[in-house]
Image 1 (tube, helix red, strand yellow):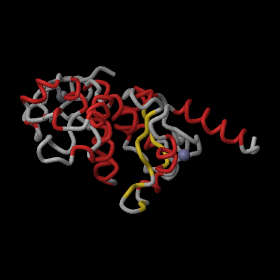
Image 2 (image 1 turned 180 degrees about the horizontal axis):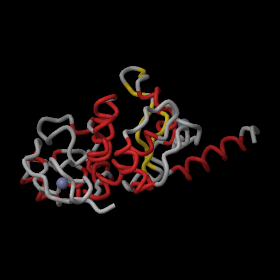
Image 3 (image 1 turned 90 degrees about the vertical axis):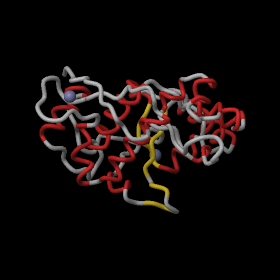
Image 4 (image 1 turned 120 degrees about the horizontal axis):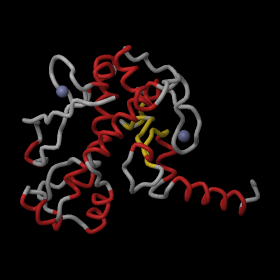
Length: 228
Ligand SMILES: [Zn+2]
Ligand SMILES: [Zn+2]
């Protein structure tokens, strides 16, 4: 599908996101307003939290480490993390105020705008493939299927343990943490192929290893303990 691609301006949060990369992702030649996340329109109505999660996880760095008034905002766009320390400093994002470990974690989350948008689209597709997910509108269904192939209910599995994911688990939370999280097969690559959903506990267990490293680690434990 050919996309409209017109630049979208006047975004909120522009102070920390000055690159003006936002574009329209509706089909080329569409009528009406340009939109950055047209495929999230339906989820935004029936499950705004899930839609917001997809937008946030695909485009933003994670927060916690940023909770310093001196250092900068809580979350910033991943593509801003591709800028140099000097360029970030000029934006009021002071990398030298952060511990080196925090800086390297943030730098690991860097991704281009296009990578982030592909992740958002793919996460939306994966959401509709979960058991008990609502059906997408016909327009969104054909949009997503033109990129990723048929949407099959119940086909989306946890990135880590490969068990099916249930859409209802989005609503479940323990101590404010959702039971489904966005996860990376290799923690340092934010691309559609490498990003998916995982059970929260599976994501925690994987930690900062790649999924392959995680399996190898589990295997050594099982062998050592005679379980395998
Ligand atoms: Zn447009
Ligand atoms: Zn799992």
